[in-house]
Length: 271
Image 1 (tube, rainbow, N blue to C red):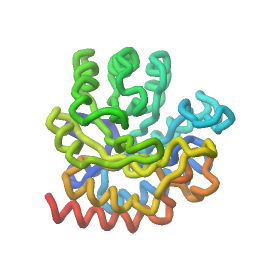
Image 2: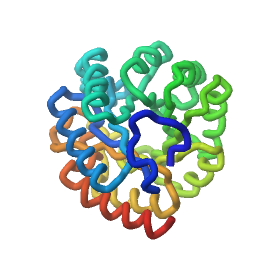
Image 3: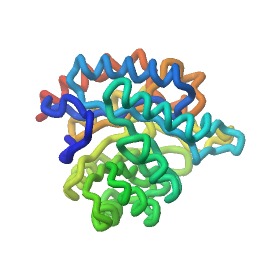
Image 4: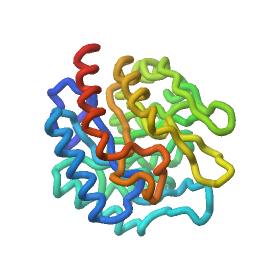
């Protein structure tokens, strides 16, 4: 569970895991609001603390012509509207130091992408905003190496840190999850999240479009809860096949409630 104050995070006394979920990218206001409303209805029913996730821009794409966003300010204002409309915290990625203060004006949690988790200036800039900083573990790093990311943020005066595992590189086109890493990162005194969707990516495809195995999302999530993950990260969309980003590994929104019901039961069994 999150062990520091986060405004608007409901159900913190439920003893459930917390959830970061939403579309990979902000594609437009209407669809973002629909996704948020459905997830909030489910998480309120199940007493799951919930943070809405959406990237205002996708900076890391396989092909130069891939969708990157609808415009930074437009997307960030949609994230702000979701937070105010539904009274929930929001999280988005940042990619360069100059983006930290800009994004912090609209969202509650700043996320550091896995490929950038060693970027000292970026981590420090995020820390200086005073926002919660969620750092995704690089797929090229051990869990133990993430202590240095935590130290950079804490030594910058911000102890509101979350670490998220998203698997480790396995060959050129696959990822695997080493669940030993979750308790190892929890030993740093921060909440640890399992990214159940990006862990199933199949990067570096010859088509230039990242693949995935969304049929295994439930497997990844159940294992994470069983070993004591504090939270889960799940990208979800009402039409993954036509999503503008990462559709190959997103969970269909209609499947989310059934999955969360199972995970809540599992959490109750293992705590």
